[in-house]
Image 1 (tube, rainbow, N blue to C red):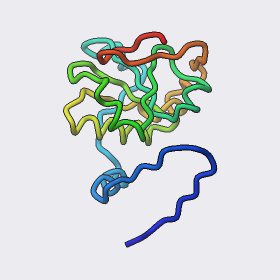
Image 2: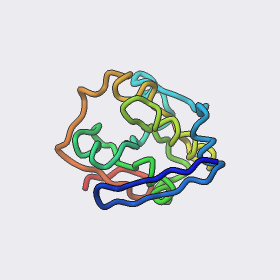
Image 3: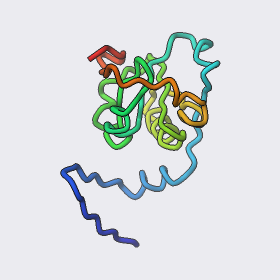
Image 4: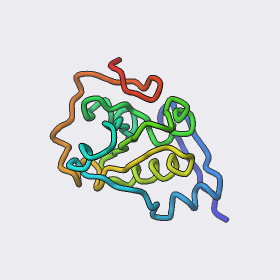
Length: 142
């Protein structure tokens, strides 16, 4: 059994993972990964979900991508629909694989962007001009 001491330097929300969920996240989740060329072959255009923090999203995100930070996934999953394909991404692919795995276990149609933005070479396609929200499982401009 291990304990940790957490000291916050700014206002925030501290969340606790159950032992079982923590063990799941430590394992390398098995999820379907896609690259940019695969997006067009999906049965319908996917909805892009940026699972990075809000501050990372504000610095730059893909056009038409909504921000659903991994730590808020349990709260924000109610905005998703089971029949919509979602491509999840982060910088390296680690957070997006975890998010895709957790959502996939609950019946959502999810894919993780292989290698994240950096591995896919898509970090040059980011914009900070507009923010997008999820409404009925789809992305709309804020």
